[in-house]
View: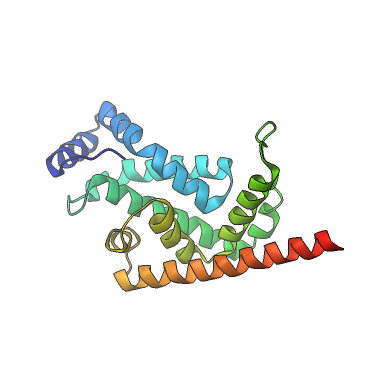
Length: 192
């Protein structure tokens, strides 16, 4: 994500509020790759991530007037995006759709398999991530994958800094348990 100054963020937001499509395109180009990566990790499917990215930027377009400059424009977008992702995940959980989605993403695209063992591990990790509660998953991805600090995550997700630390710790412990169980299960099946 490009480093921008406070003044540049405020100017870009003002241009977006004024309906300057070039400014909104600039905002999209600067922040969409990272928001897409987070959405991919949150949902585990490229199609869902693409839909979510569109939804995030539609929200940004409608809500750019609420940007007050209290944080960077990137942080504001991440908070908006993460909240949208969490809302969608909660909605899906209520409808109990997540169980059938496991079948859709288990096979990598043709030609993507170079080292079968690394693909298996990546798939195990993606499956384990989907088993995490949405809040833990979001905090873990933002901290351990995206490299944000707990104070930034707290701001993005609207939680306390201590809650962010706790969520990341819980996510790590749960992931470790899930991955250990899969590894142990895989070994015992191979020995039979």
